[in-house]
Image (cartoon, rainbow, N blue to C red):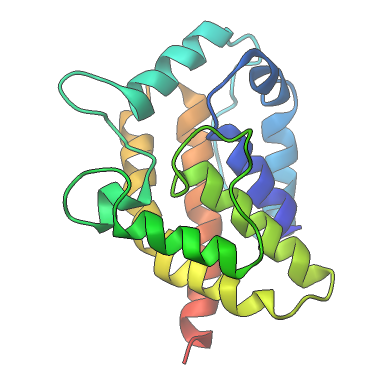
Length: 194
């Protein structure tokens, strides 16, 4: 269940191409809310308007995550928050890339962004959880590191920026749901790390 939830959250943070827009439009938040409820993460969130226009979401994605004057509102990269320089492709990027490789995977050629993008890290969490559920318990340690040392450290600040600054409900709701799940997992694994 958590693997599917992470996968849904990852999809929402990718650039809303026409195909992705359609995949995250009708029923997306119903499916997400159902999974969150099954995880015990009840939340009261406003309904996202199903009549949202793709161009509105594209504009907001660009404003929040790509370019806004004078600064990007909510850069979706771990290195911006963790490396203290406000730049992409820092030490954190290399660290998360090593974590991916330790799990035996690499960034997909179809992913055209930096490895420490929120969508990539959420997709990685989904992959790890699915592997653990399938019996590959060696992935548990990698998952703990991802949650506690990566997502759990930088994502709360990023998600708060999205919730505070988004002009459309889609990204506020997406960020709120993501924050709840990461917080749940961080609390569990904070206690589990030696």
